[in-house]
Length: 149
Image (cartoon, one colour):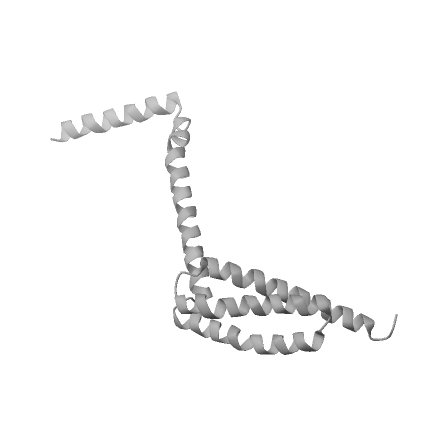
């Protein structure tokens, strides 16, 4: 093995990985993005094409051309990021909405559990002798109210 063969192979593998990730990410993004048709029809195909070009450069072994393509594909990625951010597609807002939905569902679940468990808790809470004592105390209080009136 020559001294720089492993560098060449590593660079080709990283370029292949970057190309595959770009293609998969931007194809998935095109499928889920509802806003900004200009973005979908211009920037996303350019970025998918850049990812496919990187895959081709990695397979053929043209590392120099692949590195140039990587450098130039950062401009459409930056433009896409700015357009998506400007249109309100903030990732933190999406995560916040998902967290609020999970919290709401968790709260509903606990309320349903509590409502269903009330009967289970009260069933064995008062024994027969305790119930008889409670009824006797209520009777005495009721008789005492009549006597006072």
